[in-house]
Image (cartoon, rainbow, N blue to C red):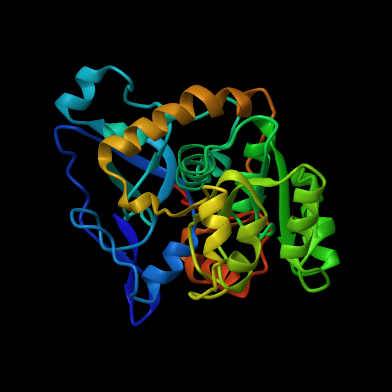
Length: 328
């Protein structure tokens, strides 16, 4: 089979061995691949696949069940030919991949393979950090910065679908206009407005931020933390805007605030399986009822994976970039 392997920080279409399905695994004939910033880091050699996964990138795919191990068959969730999507530790940039049965989900009924490929990593990350780590509740306010990012294109509609109020930030009025359909209640242009001052005003207005799913961090984190709601959760999922900040400890103490670091990759297989089961139970019905939908910026063939990752690096996408695997 073919896979896009990394050579000298470039992805190269390479002949590799077809994966043999283990007892508890499902093998998937891949139709589409959702790409993520972690893939870009893996291409650069700074984010290798965990032990036991293929060395090439790819954390989320959709496709058709091609084979199953005996233990996977006995669980009775899938049959050969089923349309599925899966969360991976790596290896998605290929024609086939094997995944533990618990990491595989049925596709929502109303989605294409391209749309479904954007669900496993991005939706699991958003659900994990909004609800498990951030304890977001209906009627509360969430702050999801970097509103034009692929992850925010999932997290904002997800929070809204569960009845939360959402604040986000962008770098221009033009981008603010483009992401308006995501449904955020407040969009901050951080080149013109001080994010912390806006969050301070939200607190004065009685709508303080109860949680943040923050991929930027940096200076804004420390400046904004004092204006959170009592018992609030600020969840750090990346540090794209800087690895250092100054935190006022007194509000942390008096408000009982929680500063949390979170990585989906650090979760155990059992935790991931539970997380994905909750997605199917609680999020898939909202997708099938058109309460939320994947936002796709561009679809490219697998062979153009380098260009797809360049789009992420340039930051030009609003929504997810997807790779399509064409049948021979």
